[in-house]
Image (cartoon, rainbow over all chains, first blue to last red; front, side, top):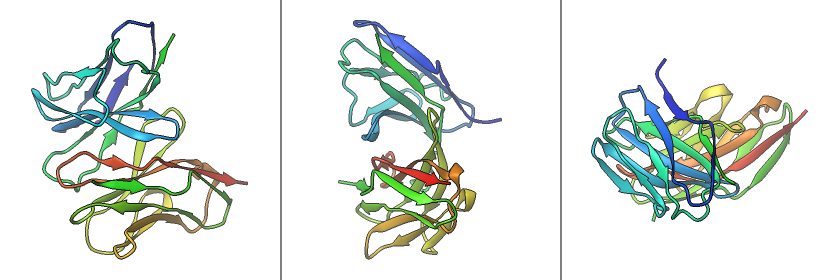
Length: 114
Length: 112
């Protein structure tokens, strides 16, 4: 079945560490997105990529980095510069070519700083 | 700037009663509007979308939404609520060729 796979489901980070969240899709979608979800704040856009080897910052990109070397994969690195990384992270993908397409979401990764 | 407002953090409804979850939007040009549902510790699932045409849009699980251009609203509705409808609901708008902008979400609680 086609879909988006996020791993791991739960992740624990020590202070000062970088961690990488995985996102893989087999939907042949051109565009991929990372959102952060905090209680009462909805979803906030971190980074997005509309084509391989290209990506743009979203509203809260500071302290995060991404790469898009393959169409299927869009990993997110949470760096030590992100001061409050504890949150639920959601990856999504969509077809390119217009705004009438919605997103397909992964099941999320819950990151906790210990 | 494009934005979505969901004025209610929480909506409570008795099972079997109709439900409405409110959404208003602000966008330049024609709006592309979406509703998603999220169950605990899960990703978002698509419910329905408005692109153009009929103002009443029917979606998954018996949900529908009414687009009202003059009131810039896109309220989600269901004629008869189920306990299993209890979840977090997000309204979103997609400006032309840019990422979805989400509201803050409304928690729906259906009481048996």
